[in-house]
Amino acid sequence: MLKRIVQLFFILAGATLGFIFIPEFISLLNYSSMPDWLGNPYIGAVIGAVLLFVATFWMADYIVNGMRVLEEMIVKAPVTDVLFGTLGLVFGLVVAFLISLPLNSLEIPVINSVLPIFITFFLGYFGFQVGFKKRDELKSLFPASRTAVTKKREEELLIREDSSKVKILDTSVIIDGRIADVCQTGFIEGTLVIPEFVLEELQHIADSSDVLKRNRGRRGLDILNRIQKDLPVEVEIYEGDFEDIQEVDSKLVKLAKVRGGMVVTNDFNLNKVCDLQGVDVLNINDLANAVKPVVLPGEEMSVQVIKDGKEQNQGVAYLDDGTMIVVEGGRDYISKTIEVIVTSVLQTSAGRMIFAKPKLMEKAL
Image (cartoon, rainbow, N blue to C red; front, top):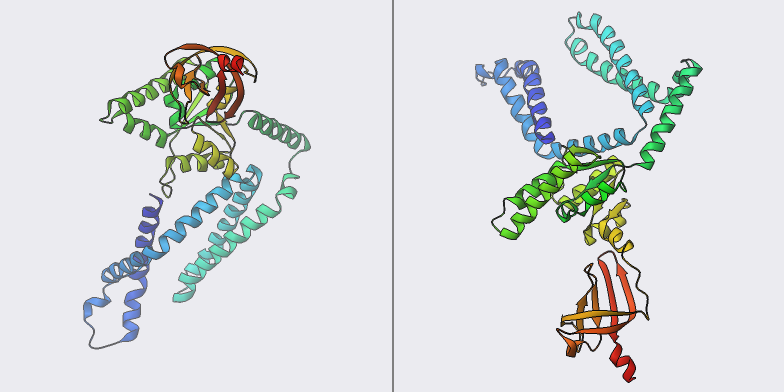
């Protein structure tokens, strides 16, 4: 969308410049072989618009990237810096307009057309720099009491922002559904941000021809309705998008950087990407593993072996909370309930695995 706006601006600018300057340029050439219609201002406007539109094919991307970098710089900059810089810019533009008024009355073509543009650019830039670099001195012009109150409010806002960063939900954690129960308990504070591109992905999943995917997508939409209507948390729908990024996970990381928030997920790979990018992340699986009962090596438990394991003679069993238990030599006990002794526990963001061996084997040894 931003690229289209830049192209439209170039077309309008080219049409304006062509309308003004191309007929004069044609008249200066004074070639007798040229047709008369080339000196028509409207033909010049069309030529100028086409020329600058062609130029946008390699210039528009650089301009859009520069605007995005400028946008990120403004978003990350303190409010006072942006405010005083903007005031300086406005003051410089007003002065440039007052200076340009007498110049426009002159009948010298270059002075009354080009010079006001140069003055406007120069004074606008100069005013912004003065307002930005002299912000501390300008703030001292206000009463001390107002300054103290302003500083106190800024400190309170910073403390509040640090203690309750926005939580950005990804698709997997919405479909999982446990985030609603966690919010209901009050363990998550702050604003929950649901990006519009995540909602679009949920809608595509809910409209899928595959029954399993369709049910998961509809479950995710039901979870969002429950969070927004029934739970005491603030929910924000982020309508922005990052058109230059295709992957939803990459957009979530970018949004977390721009908003200074945290990504809430149960996707192991997204968890690792956030760690590499320096983005704070809350993994629901980590929370679930943290509140599971602690199992230590040497403990005994009764389990039912369900199926074969990946390695030879291994069997696999599960606890009530879904934790997988790998039983060494448990292949012979499939579909049976046996007593096992825990040998080791492996815990990662993807889940917890318990390794054990049958108690009967321990007695035999």
